[in-house]
Length: 174
Image 1 (cartoon, rainbow, N blue to C red):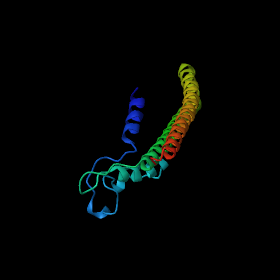
Image 2 (cartoon, one colour):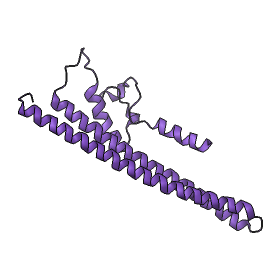
Image 3 (cartoon, helix red, strand yellow):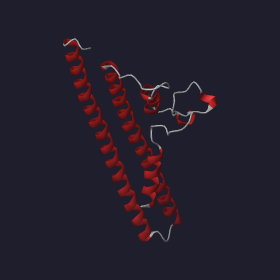
Image 4 (cartoon, rainbow, N blue to C red):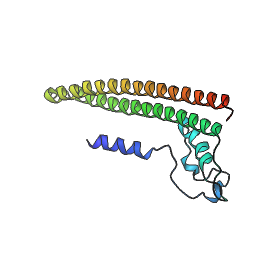
């Protein structure tokens, strides 16, 4: 249980949205609210900076309302970001499970090399390894299904946004 708690806290701290902070003087060209330390190479993080810059309030006062085109663009960016974050999560889960499986294999080899006193503890270790492999396979399948489901939902929303844009264009609003 301690192991799972440690991994859960790692996900909580790996939030793609930057923490609220004041912009240091060395990064005056950066978007407001985005610290240089928050930049990561993942695609979801690459989209986070332009999004936070596009929704931050203007320095002089109230931000003007966004046009339908800007809203549609922002919705598409957020959907792409959500899909990237889901893929990043699945990738991280795979890496964690691979590491756990590698450690279990290492311990099994140590037990095998010990020779005489393997008995019950080896059976327990083998059972744990099989359980871990089953868990890895299930998480991989669940993660892949989550990515497929998220992509399908995003595609449905994209179609709805496109339909809304075409109706607004036909009505002469856009």
